[in-house]
Amino acid sequence: MTWIITKYLLTAGMVVFISEMAKRSDRLGGFIAALPVMTFLTLLWLYIENQPEEKIANHAYYTFWYVIPTLPMFLLLPYLLPKLGFWMAMGACVVATVICFGLFALMMKGFGINLL
Image (cartoon, rainbow, N blue to C red):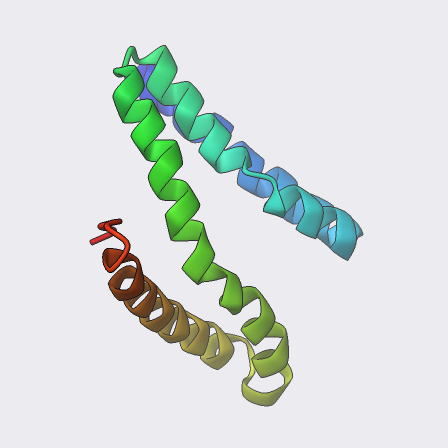
């Protein structure tokens, strides 16, 4: 139980750290958020918990493919935010991301990469 609490605190601490950096500097906050910090922590947790190398490698592999259809959200949000407000813009971004992911998964299936 202590281990899970430690993981929660360290992982949540990174989110708080990134949001605090973003308050001080848009560029620095965006840069730190763009780093694969959470993926790195997840891979670290899997390794420390003696997960097989294949599971760790698969996590990294699928993370790569899952990041691609989320990228349009980062361009859509700044465009929609002044027009719709925060919550509507976020909702629209969630819907757009789900649609992008579905279309991307269908497209990648044609190349033999099964994301769903």
